[in-house]
Image (tube, rainbow, N blue to C red; front, side):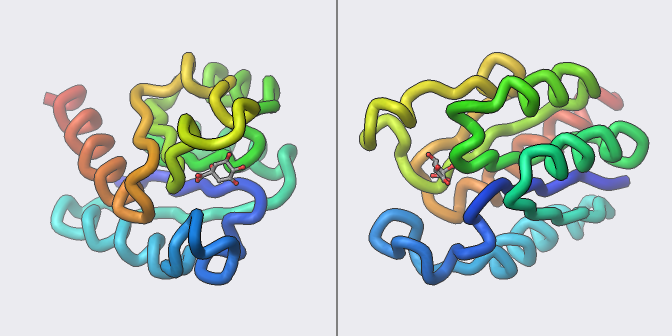
Length: 147
Ligand code: DQA
């Protein structure tokens, strides 16, 4: 059993990137947190980050054959990418969208998510904890579906 933890552009810089907005937790810390939520359920977390839109599309396509769901912080592509939205719609896997910051409190260009209509749910503004909550929700959803 596997889920994909997918992070988009600039999230490799977590820990040092605008700490007043994104905190000081690193992406590696987040990947470990999510794995520790999944461990008791025997679920493996495949973690992937890319700054490239097409590479993220490829990772979503690959997940179709390997994963039961996706936790996805698309970073700035959230607000721009029809290609990522179509990829999620295309593979048909449940996807939970995570944003570390409260995008609704920020610039208006961050208020729109092109991915929201193809997400199972969204977690916004709860910092790195949002990823762990997303993992819980995704596991719950996947297990319910299997029952
Ligand atoms: C973000 C919010 C986006 O607007 C921004 O471009 C990011 C990070 C977040 O996690 O809060 O890169 O997705």
